[in-house]
Length: 475
Image (tube, rainbow, N blue to C red; front, side):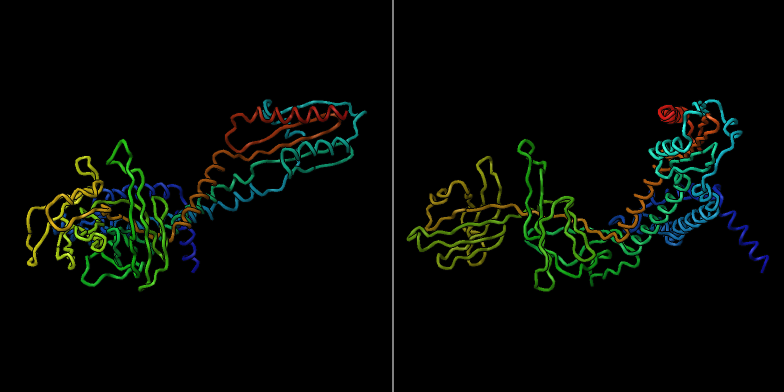
């Protein structure tokens, strides 16, 4: 049994080596290359089996090259790196904590004299005029202006010594960095297991109950669509795009200024949520976040028009809403028409729709004719007993939504905040100790710093001048 624990101790010491850390980081860098160069499953609509030869595809399946960032070898290195961070932290913790939390001690006069001349400041006062306890009290107040935990470490009838320090917790700031990295890893693992990403296109005025998955965690629990695409999954509810609008820049007609979708969630036939969704303003429902990502033209139009009989037009007016190529039959007028084409601005004359009259056998009758929205009486010049007035021509778009669920996001954002704070504290805050000793009318002041000594001499000199001024003022 003793031999086993000796082996454990030796293994732990090796795992705590910084060389192991460097080796793992280099390994992660090299093993990230396949994930960049090789087509990844769930990151594209293209199946790797269609892109590579059979032998390479079989090899990639066996080695998990097509899911590189979720492969056993990549995740394994992350696990080993986590163990390495824990081992390094545990191994060095006692010494680092001792330095950060050590109780202040008093320096002997000889210790001050061994300090470099640039860090040692000496001055004298008339000890006959000075009250030593008053000096101690006032100079302690000065020290507490630099550190609230300043204290007296030695006090006799002939001498006293004051100690204060700043930045002592920078000694263990690297532990905040290590812990934050572990938190980030934990958040990433949770997201990779339970999260997913996908997309969907919804025509305005339509609803869908499924979406295309690009990335899916093994524990996400998404249900496939029967007889659907390989990467098509159920939403579990219906999502409708009740309306969609896009605004273009006046000087750049093809460049969108803003686009917005009006989304509505249905459970069965019951509406449970409505949301006006823009870029960076998602709709969130259950485990789904729907982001406005894109849009496109469907090549169809929503058209509102009136069919009017020329005889008794007040009683022979019929309001119709139609899409292109939809047959519209007005029985009272004994007319059947079909909107063939539409344009929001035909040759600079505004919105227009081209219609054709059809027979009972759905065959065209006569020539197609255009009707302009901004010229309501334009169609009444034709020698037929009826006319058409166009009230609205609206191009129909589809809204492109990006879908995601990232349960680890709050966790690794917390880790990122801790990582930044710990890194900032480790880089820019140093542990500084200051010692002030009074003995027989003589003052000795010096300080120490554990790293980054640049500018420390000036800092010590500045603080010494404060003590000098305070001691002279009570002399």
